[in-house]
Every structure is written in C-alpha cells, then in structure tokens.
Length: 253
Image (cartoon, helix red, strand yellow):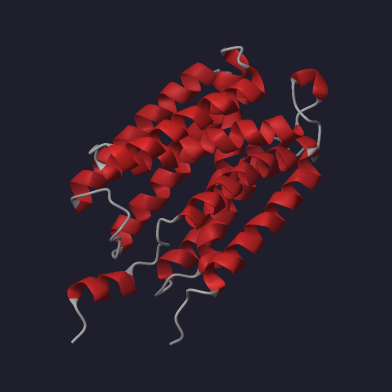
C-alpha cells in the first residue's frame, strides 16, 4: 500500500525546497523587478496599466496552477514571475503614483502580509509549505507570495533611496541578513517555517535591489545595463535553471 506520506508528496504541487529552488527564486524575483520596470518605465506603459497587465497574467497562470493535478515546473515558475512583476508595479503605483512613499507603503504591506499569514494559519492550521495538498492552502500560499513580493519592492526601494544606502549597499545588507538566516537554519533550533518565510520574503528585496543595481544609470549608482537586456538574460537563466533542475529528477509515470 502507498503510505499517507507518499500520497501527500504526490499531491503536493509545489517544488522541494533545495538550493536549486532558492537560485530559481532569486532569479525569478530579480526578473520581476527588471521586467516590471521594463514595461512600466522603459516602455512607458505606466504603473497602473502595467499592474493590470501583470495581474491578468497572474490570475490566468494561478487559475491553471490551482486546476492542475500535479507539479508543473514551468507553470509554477510562471506564477512566481507573475507575482514578482505584479508586485513591482503594484508597489511602485502605491509608493509613487498614489504618493504614499516607500516607508508608508512598506508598513501597509507588512501589515497585510502578517494578516495573510495569520489568516492562513487560522484557516489551515499551519503555514508550512512542505505539505500543501488543498486548494485552500495553495490559494493562501499564492496570495501571500503576491503580497510578499509587493512588499519586497517597497522595502528594497526604501533601503536604496530613503535610507541613503544606495543599490549596492542595500543589496549587500540584505545579502548579509540572508546569510545570517542560512546560518541559523544550520546551527540553531529556530522554527524552520519561520526561517523559510523570512528568507522567502527577503529574497524579493534582494532581487529588487540587485535588479536596480544592474539596470539603473551610473549617475544613480547602477551598472546601466538596461531593463530590456537584463530581463532577457534573467529569463534565459531561469529557463536553463528550470530545465537543468527538473530534467534529472522527475520520475517517469
């Protein structure tokens, strides 16, 4: 007979949390920053229309993800990229167009994110990503990710602009915090679910500041690579990572 644990693993449509997962997550969230800026700023579509476009992509991809019966790597990472690009333009719309500012925008988003995690915990019983086998839990998972990626943009912009750290120093600061979380996962007994969500949330401002560092002009402290070429490069890297990561471990049915 198939064990309950094996059945749960087969029903779980989310990827295993491995080094490859974190590499793909960082690449996808960095792509979200550069891709969002490419449409809203480089193509001059604007924050509101770009947000509507990316949210439409998110809804379509999420619908397909929720209706699927198993883990589909390219579909899963399409939803991740959609949350990241939508999060970028949503944050910029709140902070710049609506004039909330980075600090106030980040505070609002932190509150929403904590409320989402609390609601998920109350509705499902836990916020672990190791055993998400119901559509209710998966819906909470994706909505939480959407707001965490939106928060990440606001937090990254706050550190880079309002704090005066600049893109490079902000990226180094977040990298240092992520390194501390990594060490804590190996050498402390801090709750692993808490550490996961801390790392998951912080990879977004990591990607936001790194994306800005690559694309912004020299005058603003960036490398001036441009959003178009940087987004294309990151997309290729993500596709290669997905193909390489999954090609050798997906069992044949």
